[in-house]
Length: 224
Image 1 (tube, rainbow, N blue to C red):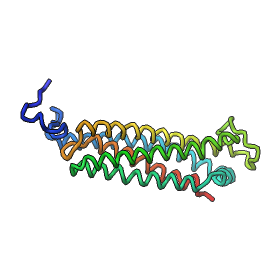
Image 2: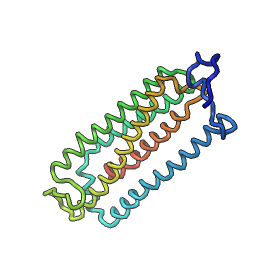
Image 3: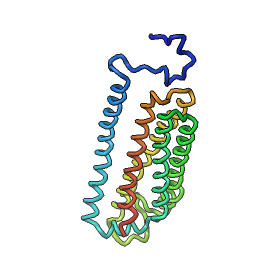
Image 4: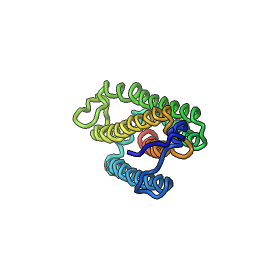
């Protein structure tokens, strides 16, 4: 195990960080980490791509069910959640910038705001959409029990709706866990102008979460 020279003991952890031995420079390590994470994000795109394909196939086959299902959603809650995620996307990007410039306290506040926005998104989704709709029978597949349905294929709409939004919500939770980890480690001095790889990667993940919702919102809420 390598030791840290005594003359560097007073420096913060980010200033004492050294790249792994199999990389020639810290910049090479940073680029390799980002490339690897971009490859991971492509698998996430493939995951949601399957949901979008199902959406377009069934919307083509059953346009009446899709129109009726969309009218049962409140675009105001979807729009509010869109605004919340856009704000969180800004604060996440701002935190990366602040770490790069050495504004650690400002970066931490931006991360806290991002976490609050993520929690607000989940609260709105659960309290104003999932629970009320589930309680009146607007459920997916065989669980469907909504007595005022006009189209017989409406259960299929709710299957696609819950599949897309629930998987997205799971990604929001994962993103919040990553952000919380970055925030915790930032208080220990792990991130600064010369080392912020984990912050950058977490930001990429969070931006993907935001981007997916930007596609889901008009496809689900604005059909009519």
